[in-house]
Length: 400
Image 1 (cartoon, rainbow, N blue to C red):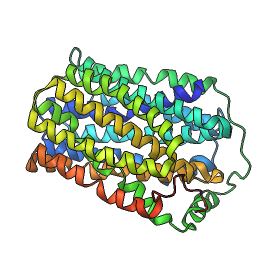
Image 2 (spheres, rainbow, N blue to C red):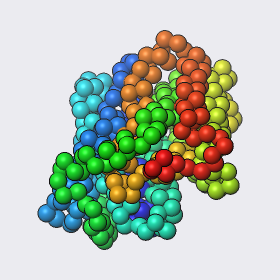
Image 3 (cartoon, one colour):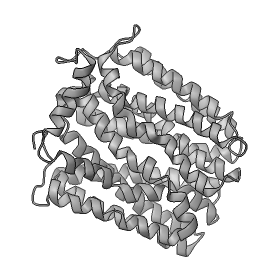
Image 4 (cartoon, helix red, strand yellow):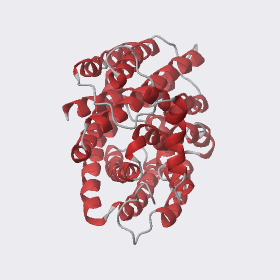
């Protein structure tokens, strides 16, 4: 359980270093808002990680074993790339920033693939629920340190130093990898690369609602994610300081998200995954409209706190149901590759849909932009009627 928690921390740490912190750095360096939005494309590896996930299933490196070998390699390369990002210059060489940030996301996505597989193979079915919960909480602590802590530090030291500190924060994860036991090799491990690629896909796409499920995973949080892609420039634009953003949005918002995840888990026990997807999806859409209200109110700490509390609480609940649904439709024989496929789709809105958000916010204005993001929640809710009807309270099995 401790390994799951600490590996979650290592996976959560790099994510916002190429989003929130990098956005703030570029904004202060005077980089155009449209370019800041386009920089979201450096997150493509999170979306495409299913392409090389079979390689990590099929091949074993000479040192540390099948899972820990790949994990040590990806974490070491990740620490080096985070450090290198701190030595780039957003105003003079934004494309160099993009290239190094791409390396950060590639090695971070590779780490995610291996950690997901490790957790599934290391924990028994009885332990998997608690272990996954601890992993998610560790992930959020890593995100909090990188975004909230990073922004607060940036008010007092240079961004270059911030990235060196964040690179050093990868050391505990590397130590855990070296000390943790290698999971037992599961039965049915792919013996050829063709088998590692084809079998998980054949099994998944043989299901009745395979395409509808993929469309739902793609669209369920798209409005919420597009809004989140522009929140840091939005906060700065209406006059909040980096310390206020770090304290209210990240620190206070962190606990609201944790509370939402716990509350979501309890509600799913009582009402089932399907109904919670409906309830939490509607709450997510309403919370996104709160940013449009904040755009009208302007610089108000109490207004910011209220919007963040509602948005992070509903987002935490939505993410809990979202993750539970994806786990419920994964076949245990192909967990690593299938989960990589599903979580890659989950990341598409954060990367591709986020790319034009800077242009949209610049030309529509903040109020209209956040209202548009609210409306984009509708297609995902419509798909729920097909794949997770209200009357069916539970989740979907891999055979459904």
